[in-house]
Image (cartoon, rainbow, N blue to C red; front, side):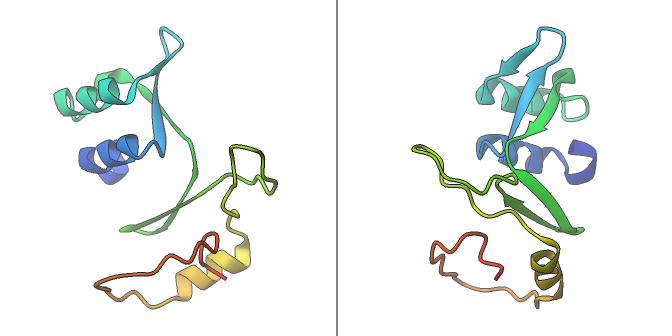
Length: 114
C-alpha cells in the first residue's frame, strides 16, 4: 500500500480506520497509534506490519480512491452498510467529470454514485 500511495496516505487510512495493521509474527491486531508510529519511524518497511482493508477500496484513477463497505447488503443493529459498487456504478464514477468543488453535500444516499 505504501509503495502505491506513500506514507502519508497510509497514515491517513490508518487514522480513518479504513485499514488496520497486523503483526503477522505475533498474530495480533496492531493499535492504530502504534501502526501510525511505525509508519513515521520507518516509511519504507512500516515495522514489517501487514495491512488489511476494513472497507472495499477501489482505485479509480492514479490519484483517486473510493471506499465503500464490502458486499454486505443487509443492516444490523450496529451496522448500516453503504452499498458496494457494481459495474454500472463504477462506469458512472469513471465517466464523471473531475472538477474541484469548494464544498459538497452528503445527502446520506449511500455511495452517492447512482
